Image (cartoon, rainbow, N blue to C red; front, side, top):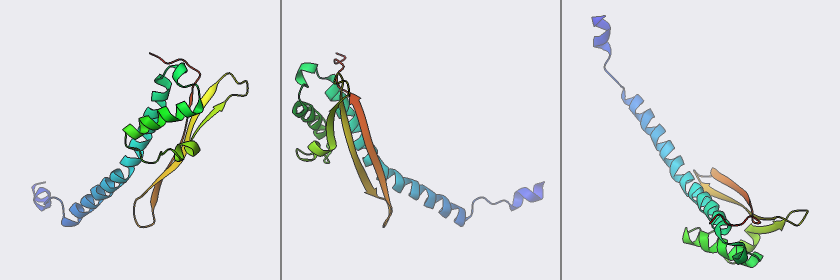
Length: 134
């Protein structure tokens, strides 16, 4: 038993390099994904801010888009501008016409390596006909 324990010296340089390479890959992946996730969280927050407004202040599509745009601008989401919010943010009615829905739909990409990109497909819908929870 004593003879075996004397030969074990610890990690080799190759083992250390492999662990460092794996940590570097996880770090690079995390730095690439975090802005996408942060943007998604800001969009969800923008949808919630529209829902938190009273029904009287969110009657028209223009008012709804303006509330959403202000919220995402506060969170520094540069994807949404006065022009793009008309394309990316839609308000639809149900078939019965009693319910209104706010939908945000877009795709976001970040470059991971040379020609490898990470894409996030956002398609979030919330019901607008509910009264605010305040």
